[in-house]
Image 1 (cartoon, helix red, strand yellow):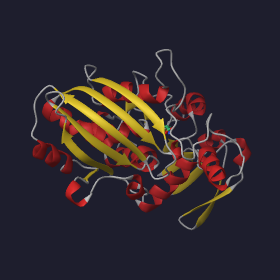
Image 2 (cartoon, rainbow, N blue to C red):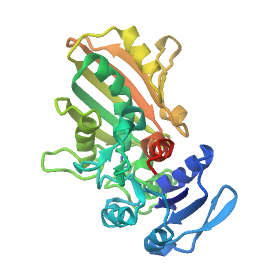
Image 3 (cartoon, protein in one colour):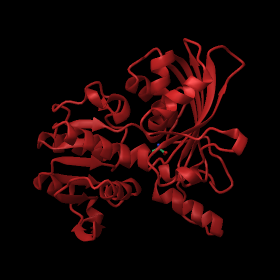
Length: 329
Ligand code: 2RA
């Protein structure tokens, strides 16, 4: 099983390598891929040195699977070339997520849709993954009518440049800006670019991807995505209105019994999810579950997850594990 990691030198690419190693993914060879300027660099994997190669060289080396985290433009141009060479692509960019012919997969929810014919598979946006993992069991039980979500997103979602900007600002150093404004001691309500409707692409991903993954276009979603100076993960305040009423203890049991979810919900001991605890873990943490008395059949919850892991690298590797387990690659 030969695996290519495209974008191996980036934040998510580095976490992909770490997750492949931690989960002891049964690969016989690793092909780290990056842009021309990184070709020839050496990266370490399981104590061995691997030389970074170009995209074309990676195709020529014929991996079984290519895990992409190299931006939308690279995915749009190169994922079809890898697929045409018989290589299954699992792509972290937004390039293919809303393509009608591509599957958008969170393994715990809809991996069963996957077939041998899926040669380009889309990994959802990080903030979508953590939210739909919590919504899926509740949608099944009570049918979701509407979701109102506000996100508090880690700077790591923007990449190395943003992490550097925060470090510089905290050290009082003037440096390259990843954002229009300082991020230190700030909250920026602007993740990705604005669309015609006044929402950002990041906010519209939560709308469109949630409907696709839960396979229900009747689910109304509205979102506000905010960037904050944390490093451990994305947090989300989620208000959900259902068609049917619910019982809070049953809601907690449904979540607790759902794979990939860890309940941290006990205000008597100040137990609730926080990025400092989610950092470096693969679970989605759910807490502050409470009925919204302002309207029927509605509850609030707080969802936190490491955006680089379950939000990107781990979900991607889990898709590859599923494909392998089912003999689809
Ligand atoms: C962000 N979800 O956090 C986006 C891309 N990783 O900026």
